[in-house]
Image (cartoon, rainbow, N blue to C red; front, side, top):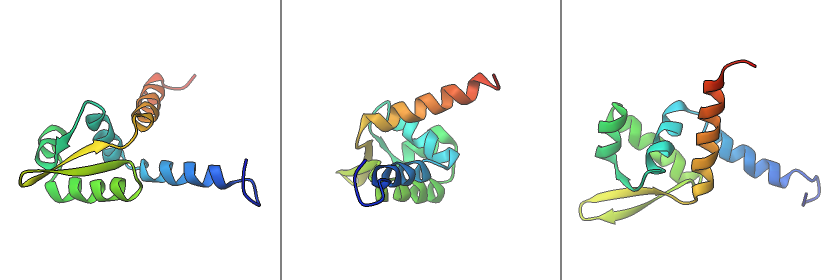
Length: 100
């Protein structure tokens, strides 16, 4: 651990987990794990309204989870780091296991 209180690494992890705390954000990350997507593709796949998808993409972008790159008139979103896709996949898998 680094820093004066030893919790700096945990603070960063906490911020990441807060960014992933909404179910729709987990779904967005799962979709982006398959490859780049534009907003309209995410809207179609997730069945969520465009403003809602855009709002959650903004949160994920602010947290450094996704990045956007211009594709003509659209912006294609992709994961910055594949580690996040693994975290989400593991969380979804664990939740599906039910109580032990």
